[in-house]
Image (cartoon, rainbow, N blue to C red):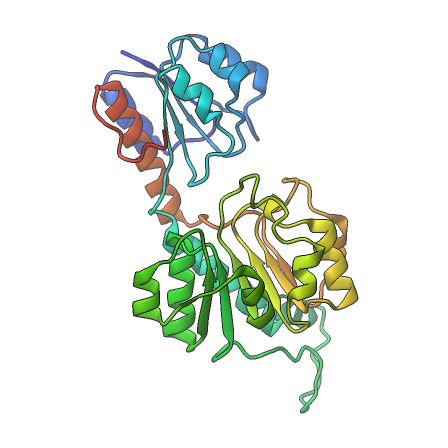
Length: 321
């Protein structure tokens, strides 16, 4: 029998899977993230932890968990986990890729369309009883999406899924910048691999899908926004710190770019007050990329699959170290 700590709610059927395998499951019952002191105490004799991106699994915590064998992170990214220390201690770290690709790509395009067609603003106007008169230049006029140029920064699984929606659903020209060329996207979607600067200068919509690294932190800074079209819209569903929010607010206020759809924030859960203040062609969502019932269940199942595999001496399905 192994002791398994879950830092947040876990679907009952997945808890049952762990218990049916003979393991003890400790669930955090409170609202919000588990307090760090409690997590350290819980992991003192635990062999597995199922955690979220908001849980900081660092050297101190790993050092206080001498029996820990597996960290199952319920997310694609794993910058919250000290991979080097985990590897040194022989602890397997896993993530949940693939299962959230389509849901995140759906939200990406929802943000793009909402900002372009000013849907959130229009909804607010109707609810406030200020239905505008129809006219050729009426208020809340948006911009076309069909046939425009979509720039993908990071052509991984999610970036490719967004490009597929843009090309096949909206007849968009696809430019992309990534660490390496993706021949399948070039073949199937007519995507063109271009330097970052060219992507910025030619794209009508720029969609961000890179992991957070030292190289990508503040990739979108004041200089990057200055190279974008004044009619361009930025969409970020990757990681908040990839975008310098001070620079983004300034670019939006000064008309350097036209709009933004933002699902992730530099200092989550805090949101830059300038973004809160801006309403025109700016839409904000609280990190909902994978937030569908089906996807969250698939993520939980994959995390449990990984834990059960490691605890039985098998290779996990999606290891990252």
